Image (cartoon, rainbow, N blue to C red):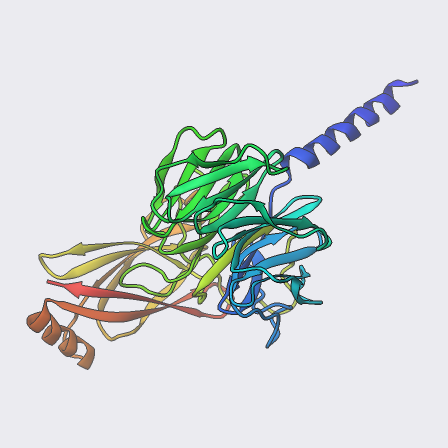
Length: 401
């Protein structure tokens, strides 16, 4: 007679353990210019600017670094020397939740404390989660600390001008300013799956190491632009790309798998100047009603054929549908191929482009190629899933000879 109650108790304990150990992060937050946004970790249901996509929304002078807990979003503001706080929905903002600081950038939280890195004072600060017991000099001797992260036993920070990652106990003892070496100009930290990830503005990369400091890999992901913030969950690493890479100076919110594969430079389209990123476990529902716009395609690798001046551009699309080149008026051909979906569930298409002939755009491109050997263009493509409105995306590149 006791078998069923005991079985139910065991199942309940197992469920609690599973919730504590394996709950996947589901929402990503970012700061862009002076505003904030959030979306599901696949980039869907984006709300920007917060709160709930309304303008002018939540505002900060110069946000740098983000952190979230179960109730609040926190950020550093390098212009005002403050740490701000608002609800996860972007309401009840307090831009001077903690004030009187230098230039706080990275922010991290535990169940009891908030930590920040201050690259003007070269200190790591700490306060109680309610904003009391402020300790601006909790850890001394950093070198332009930018990113910060915490786990169950340590606080970590990036020393930009030393190219190192520092570490101390959560109580501030056992400070090691060169816990991890080999970076060039690191900023932004994220911890997941027993590993620590950092952005490197000098190498334009995302680096990775084990949490014990071993297995240092300075360039896990190349071409990450100017990463200011990094966050990670059990499957992916995200980064805030402030200024992009040459020649594309737009920045954005990037994502990749923890092994550095399946890189998506622009998880949420049209973002730029992104300076902070954070994760939590909420899911943003897709509102009911008429079908929303098609999910955005994503641009991948671009290959040039110097012999004929053409390029082939990889595209990841979420489903079968139609794609056309809207502008400029150049030659193009789409190969949908027969490849199976990627691990993300997307399809990979290949778009071949060449200067074309007989149009004003083609004549301009040919003139520039003859004169300079290079002709930059802004490519705009239109993509439409079945039964959903069309969306457009742009990409800058150059034909070369």
